[in-house]
Image (tube, rainbow, N blue to C red):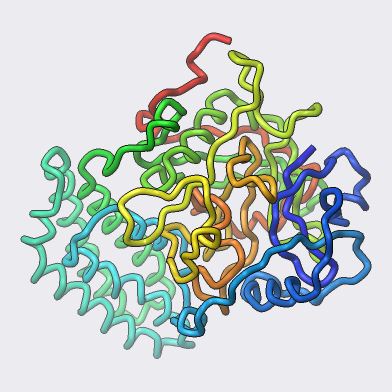
Length: 429
């Protein structure tokens, strides 16, 4: 059985509900929901309004499905028009780091802005890119001492070396622009932003807060980890095997990320099929989902206890020092709050859960297939309702090729395993 993203026949309100994934393929596309839930056209219409950036296919009336009472409050209009969201997963991860160093952010922003500059056709874009590069170079020169002062003492040597690489790279990018080599700009931009991200991570000194006592004994990721997920894609002449690189953010979701890494080390996902995919666009093609084990259990059963292991809803609000646990932002009345890890990027990774139980997530995860192109963060119907804990940073476009029945051959931690504390996979049983 699977906790799945449910929708009504007129709107695709993402809600994670129990379904039987062993149904026929037609039933998988139907997105049927739980028992005894009523349908509300008013709530459905509001959901459509809030999710305009997520849902891009026309309403479908042929699917047998139910909507679920939402009772949302429409956000203030200032939130809806607050500007375009950041969609790049790398940028989202950089801005989500728990640092407060204006000098490095002033170097970062013009480098991030190169992405928008390159949207201009032809070599004319290079004039705008050149302004970005000059701004970043000036910020690095003027702010170097402040950047160095923000480095954690134990990471200072590495931070200094990376800053030197960044300075050289900016000079190289300037020469690329002078040569009018537009095609070389984006790869160099990515390299420079990786340097910026490394410097920013070197500013984080230890883990910045205490996890609540009731969750402190769970597997926790106190920092970040990177995993590679290898998927066997069936019946596709263009793609067979694909490796998705995923960065998990334990700074903003330590319980959620720790739970996932612990399951990865147990090989829980190895050999598991994709259970909800993009083969049925008119129904639920805005997510890819997996994590439902064989048998009657809807999540991970800890062999040492014989019981299901569940984790709480975990949401980090921008400006807060620690996550909120166990309640959605809507339930708390925080309608304007911005989440640190928003559903902005194609390949945003989050936990599935039951519709009416905020703390029912276990092992089922999903990846968003729609960018929040038109709707800013927290004006869609996902932010603040589901625990985001990472982003696919490489090969994310191939997520759209995944379909029900494709097989996860393996998920492996390639870095950051030392940030996992209380790992249950090391316990015998």
